[in-house]
Amino acid sequence: MKTIFTEIIQKKIPSHIIYEDDLFISILDKYPVVLGHSLIIIKKVIDNILEIEDDKYIKFQLLAKKISIALTKTFFCKRIAMSVIGLDVPHAHIHLLPINTIDDFNFSKKIEINNHRLKIIANSIINFL
Image (cartoon, rainbow, N blue to C red):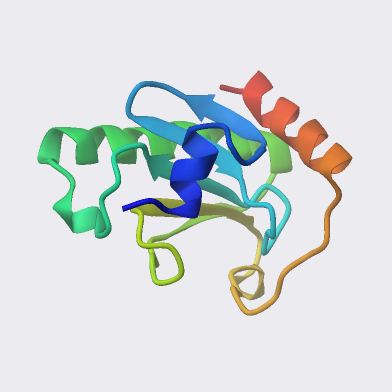
């Protein structure tokens, strides 16, 4: 099944990539909840994160930790909120959000951010990876 994430993985849709290897790609969310809102996407199209093979699931979580550390250094936040929702896009992915209060973890609000600023944020995160 093809998803919007498949298009991003195939570079058919532009995105701000902060990490990529043979199994995963991590990008900045184009419609973030907070600055630094990132996604980690498994490249293999799997709808439910619980269907990922154990060895790849462990790598998924270790990558989330690595990117979370870089986000913490970039944004000087108190925590990184991690969420697996997957209702909008049937392709397993993790949301990582730099937060200072629980109010920062509110998916019903989005902030507007231009591509230039997203590029600067992506490069800052990459510098800590």
